[in-house]
Image 1 (cartoon, one colour):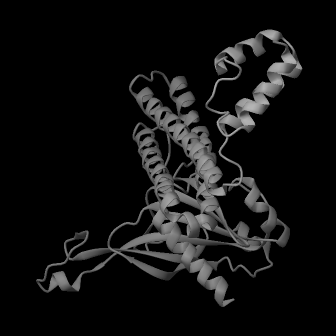
Image 2: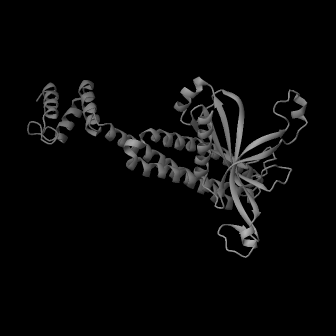
Image 3: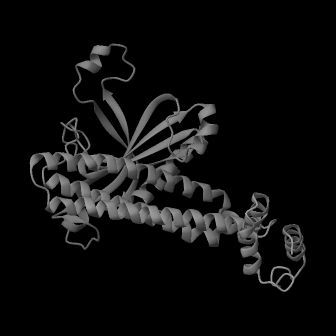
Length: 347
């Protein structure tokens, strides 16, 4: 049988209703594949590769099937990356037990910020993947919801693992968690997302940190969000950058925080029962608020006001109380997103 005859028969068989299940001219599919591969002609091997691609692809004209295949591949890729990052974090923490000498300690400590940056790129991928599923929720909600929950689970597990890693290194004196120090690793970025003309960058503190460095406000911050307003061109192109963007912003950056404060628990002080974390007669309450700068004044044109101010001072404008239970980083970010979208609607 000539090479041309084999190609013709393969096409005829594949076009027939039973062509995908029947043998061609008495030969099995594996026999034909072997004979084609042994011919050594590039023009014959190319149709074979195309045939294999068609066989593996979902039927044309079925967007739902194509979407499920694409989503499954992306989910598998993100899961493999997640397992790799979790494994790397465990290795970095295991190295603490065997480190010897100051040179080894310094080299090991330098790896953690680099690893945190690598994880930041992964967090951005999770945000991008989660946002890409939102337009499909109406038609494929039951298929997509488990995948979205899996993405949230990856993000939360990795956040918790990184906090454990940084705190462990700080306990050995290899990292500093004091945010007033220039070499501090008090917090790290856990992703970006875009909301229309707003770019939201999320940061997680490794331990509860006083809201103001030199003033006791009773507030302790756990998360921070930097909110930048983008220009029209950046709004159109920002979504194509996988959640990571250095686009030019318009106006000043706004800062929002997830904080807790211990307030008097009047109900418990009166002898009643009250659920929630408390210490003596105090109840811990979580909230989201906005940084409102007081000194230096944002409208000042005197550069010396900034040079002479060692630590900026600000008030905390509470926007939403979240109760006595600490929310997850994903839940807190969703709460802030609702507040920002509500504000955009009013504007």
